[in-house]
Length: 221
Image 1 (cartoon, one colour):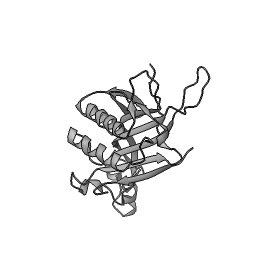
Image 2 (cartoon, rainbow, N blue to C red):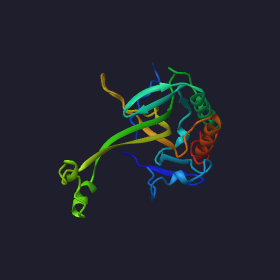
Image 3 (cartoon, rainbow, N blue to C red):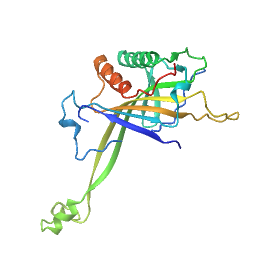
Image 4 (cartoon, rainbow, N blue to C red):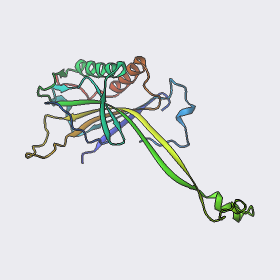
């Protein structure tokens, strides 16, 4: 697996196996660290790229007019004002760097995808205090007809929501035999975490920050 160099920035501050249809973690030192930041401070922009790649070798890119919605390993597409602005900004940024966007179905050097990841996880955990309360002399839950040594359980739900821009190498894609799914190499990945993207202004701020810290995305002139 090729190593990706990571860069991240923020004012307070996956490899995803992607099959494009072209022809047909940060850990906080304490809980809720981002929640203490103002809306202007909370976005965090993380960019990764393959250091062995010379982006100057690529000339064209294919970018669908919708975004991919990834939710717990299921995939769908969406098209609305936010997705339109995202796609438009990414396309304009790459075009300004010398890349040429091609129509769907045409051969391209790079495949570009805008992805909204919205994963939800539900778990079950035990409450140890239902046991330890008996140890401390409170009798546990025995007074209510339950064994003081039987732990109580609770469920919890965690939501992981962020935006991602991925670029895959179509020019040097491996040759596969009939019936095999083609696996494409991700050469660039940008992640937007923290504040959610809720309007076109936040889309503009996010895409501007991402491409500002990605000067290597440039066609050789």
